[in-house]
Image (cartoon, rainbow, N blue to C red; front, side, top):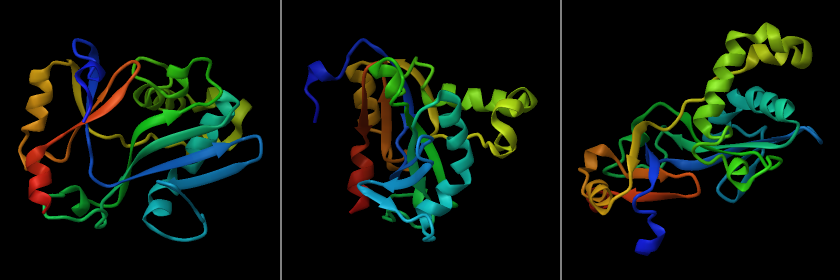
Amino acid sequence: SLDEEDLHLGEECLVTKKMDGSSAVIYYNPTNDNLEICSRSMSLKLECHNNYTAALLPYADTVKFLALYTNGPVAIRGEVCGNGINKNKANQDAKMELGFYMYGTRFPNAETIEEQKGRWGQITHFLIVNEFLKDVIKNKETYRDAYGDIVDKIKVFKTVPIIGEAIITMELLEKYRDMDKDFGEGVVLNGRTFSYKSKSDDYYAAMK
């Protein structure tokens, strides 16, 4: 649906699998100790047990730590899959065990728009954030004096599957458009200033 000038042809990108579940966000603001779990346009009651609270609440202390470390609000974005979410004839992701798969971040207090949105190549990109969390877990005694026992509760996020880096060409986009339905819904191309989906025609035909 994008015009050719909006496809960023010739630019580098990170290609990730587009999982077929439901998008969700876990957010924490340290200023007012506000934790929220959101799905699309809804903010969910944390005391209610549903697929989203079950998948995201285990990461609450991790998001709180990131917010305390950066001294500002943090939102972690991803896809909740499994347990029958978006069940259709083609969707294998709906048959998985329930889980949350990170694909993005928001750091509103970061200096640049690209950092705020966690663009590829920025320290706030979701893969870099995960590498940072691994380092904190490995060296948690270094962080304990400043952040207390919350360092013992940090978890590394599952992420959407990473396919690899690529140069965007029409041939590449056509390849993903023509992917077999068994591959899945399609891919997401993550650039340094952009992000968009390339969907499989076969997958959508098989959904019906």
